[in-house]
Image (cartoon, rainbow, N blue to C red; front, side, top):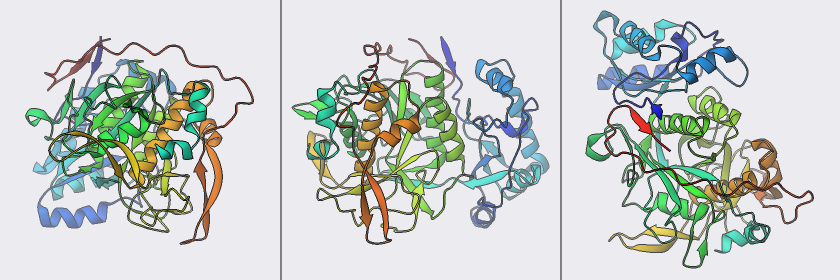
Length: 457
């Protein structure tokens, strides 16, 4: 039995206060402290995400200590409580909102004094706003060469793609027997007012966005196929019924994925995030999204995110702005870059994102097929392609697989930059080593999980 310590209203694991960790922190000059100070002066309280300079990939933490953290040989709750008391000094409000089990962040609801306490804890602590994020709304599979891969058995067999989105309707004909895990991560916004909910239908939604995205990745029904039609989907609902959400919920979902992967509960090798927000002309590598993505990449997980639909020619949204995340823009069916698609010199890849037909839910709740536009639709093409590549080449790194997907470059007339188009290999020079038969579907999860969650399987 695996214990997942996702508890509502408890402080996240924050690496900054772990005395066993030899942490090298970096300057926090690029954080959102000044903006948050103005907000808290007006609203009284504000939600913040706290990070430091810990990076497991660059070795800033003793690997033995990281192992102790993962295996539970240290008293994380005790260390968390100590930090909470420090932030509440002087009668300050510092309300913990969630618990991270692995990722080195903290999320607090603080008043002005609480914000100052966090700032004064260390000059090298970084304080970030709880960024608002939004969804970034058969021919396209041919555009990227998927049918040829299918003929070579490149169908995503045995792979699980985590979809962090608005949830899915797993009963849709295109998704039946494809969704093997469901969770909701919305602060006080899941079933029965929970902040974390895991189990059958936990990510059920009346909206069409996540269902459409999942269909592009792994749809397989009624003669309509996603890019990886034999892959499975793990659905994490972080967006509400209006398609809006917050960064902290996405980070908690990534923390859950890290545990599911490292504890070998699910063979998650790809994460799809068709969501985003903000304006980032440069890589946002000091933001917690980068640290989370780097940790997952270290475990062999590829993360793909939408560049955004604001039509920027010089900036991406978050989390796509993080260097360790594959950022995806959209093209139409004539290979022209969509006018709504964000781009900058840091954009990684282009994929079909205009007039994409996939599984959807009508306003009256009926299962339908619908055509939608957006970088949200381009992103799952890449996620599905990465699932196929992980299946076909299990010994290659995420970066190596990504390089294999780069096709012909397309010029963006708005900025004069050219970006590679997603293209699955049309022939295999060296015979790939296919993955084993699909793993058994995990046992259903308990629905009564307001506290510590046990996953069995």
